[in-house]
Length: 107
Image (cartoon, rainbow, N blue to C red; front, side, top):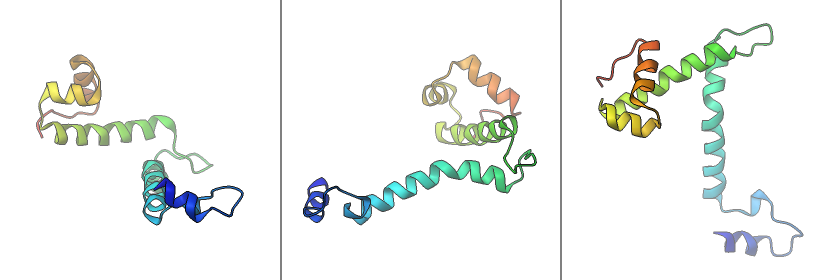
């Protein structure tokens, strides 16, 4: 992949994104878009926005923690040990978050 980029930019003083293979550029852009998407969704949903239209951190964090827990419960199959391992938290920490968001470990 790197060889193709170097070859396509051989006569250029530096390599630019357009020298990279299309598949890599698409992957990179998709990854960036996915990382930005939760914030954009929060703004679109009017999450506790102030006059700037930007969501307050408390509301944004709460929404994303809740969505994270939904995915964690689903992917762990509702098994506490697996969920703790996947999330990198203690059992008591996970139970605290589940209680905070009024969720159960049943998938």
